[in-house]
Image (cartoon, rainbow, N blue to C red; front, side):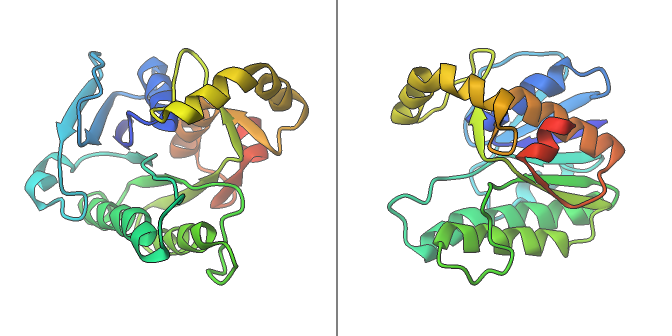
Amino acid sequence: MKVILFGATGMVGQGVLRECLLDASVESVLAVGRSPGGQQHAKLREILHDNFFDFAAIESQLAGYGACFFCLGVSSLGMDEERYRHLTHDITIAAARTLSRLNPDMVFIYVTGQGTDSTERGRLMWARVKGKTENDLLKLPFKAAYMFRPAGIQPLHGIRSKTAWVQTIYVVAAPLLSLLNHVAPNYMTTTEQVGRAMIRVARDGYPKPILESEDINRL
């Protein structure tokens, strides 16, 4: 399986990349990002690209892949709905439309979050935007598309959040997060489990298009 990965330098993306590089069923990984990830591996290739609303300049390098793991995302804190939608929905759909045209047999997996609003009419702005993004992805002509909705995610294997205050919380709360992952799988997972579950779903499929933390941990 050849994989395209968006968001490889983020916390979730780092975990997914690690599992891809370790998994024998993943032949190669193409990481698309704005800045270098700094990692060297025989299976890894990077493309640096600035405009995530238009992929015409790199289209020739995006064909021939069987899966896309889209882990790119921003926090909604301090943003109005228009700006958040632009950076969440519009970027994701721009990439997905390009990839579905170039790779009709591709499996596309998108990381959203627990509480995403599929009705697009709820009171939480971020949940509405994520819900619309999910709905629009499911309409595209991929072989299959899956929405991963983890709740809390514990970073493992030295993986760190790029946001300093978030990383501090993870460090302080590490023992509690580890406990929750064992006793409350509906509310907690790990970067390792997310990555391994993505690979398995891309390879083997899943009975439903939306996966919550419990589904991710079971896989």
